[in-house]
Amino acid sequence: MMEQKPALIFDFGGVLLNWDPYNLYLRFFDGNADAVDKFLAEIDFPAWNLEQDRGRSFAEGVAELSARFPQYADLIKAYNEHWEESISGPIQSTVDTLKPFKENGYLLYGLTNWSAEKFQLVKHKYPFFELFETILVSGAVRLVKPDPRIFHSMLEQIGRPAAECVLIDDSAVNVAAALQLGLKAIQFKSAPQMLAELAQMEIVFQ
Image 1: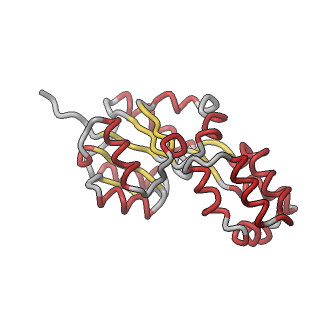
Image 2: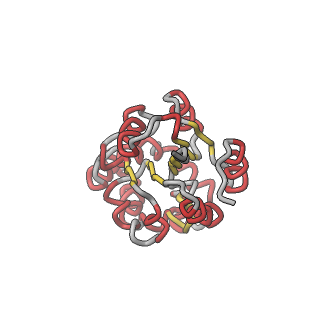
């Protein structure tokens, strides 16, 4: 019996899609990146956004943050109302590797920290999502990477041991968590770098 090829688990933001709140907020700050940076730092955007990724509704999140920063209420509301502008499009060089991997017998899975309600807005917009066997969205299970429980949930859905799975994620923290659980993992920086590291694991589609 032929040995099964490793399961490839892809993160989405920063690996397959260009997601960045700057994409949305620059127009609200007249293109001043420093002003955007200061605003996002002041409201602690990453921590706030992570709670939506963990399953909190955007309505609740906007209300909570606006209560703490009433002077920024319109800007906070704008992130909810114009959220799709935070995605500037696919990272095509990575997307272009998915179909060849799939055609060569690798099963593809998605594991993403993402608000379930916002993922619904884009999941039909990008055809490459159809190449995945399963997509586990953090907001749907109310767990976020690097919590070991979300990795265990992914492994249960795949039905394979950790050692037969490879995570591709742009977060060093998420990669470290995956490695601790026995998965193979690559911190994504570019498609060529990803392919080179996969090739070292003898994972190729040529």
